[in-house]
Amino acid sequence: MTKIEAAKQEYTDWCEAVGIDNLDRLKEVIEAGKAIDLINLCEARQERKYAEAADQIFWNRKTRRIVMMSGPSSSGKTSSSKRIAQQAKVLGLNPKVIELDNYFVDREKTPRDENGEYNFEALEAMDIKFLGEQLSDLLAGKEIELPKFNFVQGRREMTGEMLHLEDNDILFMEGIHALNPALVPGIDQHSIFRIYISALSSLPGGEKVHNSTTDKRLLRRMVRDSRTRGASPEDTILRWPSVRRGETEHVFPYEENANIIFNSSTLYDLPLLKYYAEPLLHGIAESSPAYAKAQDLIKFLEVIVPLQPREIAAIPPTSIMREFIGGQTL
Image (cartoon, rainbow, N blue to C red; front, side, top):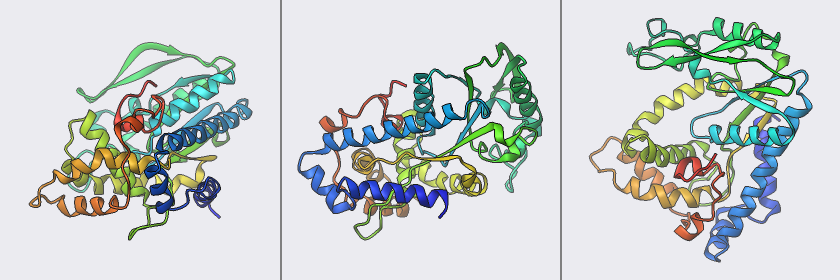
């Protein structure tokens, strides 16, 4: 059994243990007015998982001082990494964040795709040599000056901000290539603790089995991007195939390199997403090239009972799902 399969099975077993192992039972719980109880249960489970991840980081702190996290789009990587870091602080560790986006090569060195567009997702878009030098210096006890990538100018700039690892410091890094050993070929791989984050789920029921992490993540992205990035639902759907290609090429081949798999799914996420996404999907015109996919997603959500505003208000401000619907305090 692969690590991904094991993580899915563990989640399935938990769903069975709490008596919500299919869409019919989920519908019954929500219609019975127990949605807030369900939200609290799911959040308690997530809190345990954050703590378990932090425990493993703590146990390996002497030999693995770099924590690298990756996963497909809209898996809640940002929220999960912050919550795991928070739990690490509870154990007395001091997480220091290095943003991999600041290690791009200068714009003129960025590879291009088959259409002549800059391919920022390619491994070659990263300055592997410079990143490796900085990490090696940090692990050797040296101080480094952190870079900042100027996306307007397409150039790396040095910030004057210095970083040195103290005894309880742990480096946290998150990015598309974080599970690929080729990102840091000069670093001892045994000094890296890797976490794969994805919205794995399995709830049978309806015409389409609701274990499609792809459609769930697309809905998450649609809700978030329409709220924070000015992207229309149509734009999100039309960009999704490109996002998926990037994941297939750069993320999924390396998922088994992870030391642990973090499942960011919750039992209430589809009822929550239906409340926000369904109106967006209905707004896509029949003449749009995104219409067919929008109708598929509407059908995907057909058997789901949406949460109500008072129930949504009960979602904690530190929840993964707040990354998509707003109101997060992390």
